[in-house]
Amino acid sequence: MNKEMHQGKDEKFIPMTSISSGSLRKIMDDVYYFTDQIANVILVGKSKDDWVLIDTGLPEREDAIRNAIHERFGQDAKPKAILLTHGHFDHVGGLVELLEDWKVPVYAHELEFPYLTGEQSYPEPDVTVEGGLLAKISSIYPNAPINVEPYLKPLPADHTVPELSGWEWLHTPGHSPGHVTFYRQDDGLLIAGDAFITVKQDSFYKVLTQKTELNGPPRYLTTDWSAAKQSVEQLADLHPKMAVTGHGTAMKGDGFAEKLHQFVKEFDQVAVPDYGIYAPDQEH
Image 1 (spheres, helix red, strand yellow):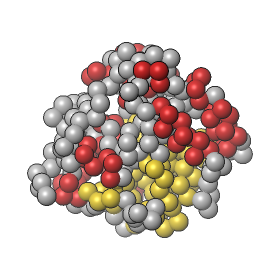
Image 2 (tube, one colour):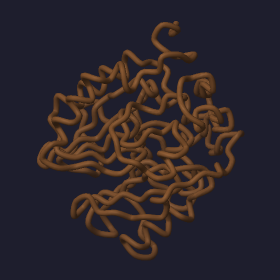
Image 3 (tube, helix red, strand yellow):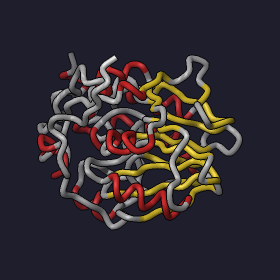
């Protein structure tokens, strides 16, 4: 085991934000989400001694996440575990610093391990992809691997979720090889990561204003659009009642499942780019 944890060698503060940044919002009594800059982290649990953190946001923003945790659970609260939907820079920012303090297990799909143990970089962001300004400047986004191997554990093979009774995890690849989604059947809540999101992430204006609309995974980092579509189809078949995504405002309501099904029908038109390195007609 490599005991030397480190953040990615290209880690840096990303100078972008949204009108929702700094907001801690309730979705259920035991599920809150915090928007930091342009990404969401999720706090699941009811007491300061029994909760988990899902994803850790953007680089160099661990203090903002700590402040949100203090607001929710009080000073000195730490999670029983950290769960990762995947390992992209905007979902593991500050993870090393938090682990140095908390020393808790980190769970992820084994296909994400190369990117979380310092072994392999993600593919370069696609600046040529069809999309807006945030796609065009995506070359500034970090893609080097971090190393959290001392605390890294695989999600259980039986699809249960550590420290979260009543939840299951689903493998939802496309945006990344080991991307996962967390689902609680009792109330139909999805924690979807970037399998789908609720803001058009490549548009600077829509990210800034957080205009709520169902969208596919961020185009500039999604490398397998066939798998991405199958993943969203899998999630729609659950008939969820609400979702917290990696980017954008949570969606819920009587018509959410229908909206998600309609989105699946339109996926090729509204989610998949017409051109780009990883666009379907150019995928290898």
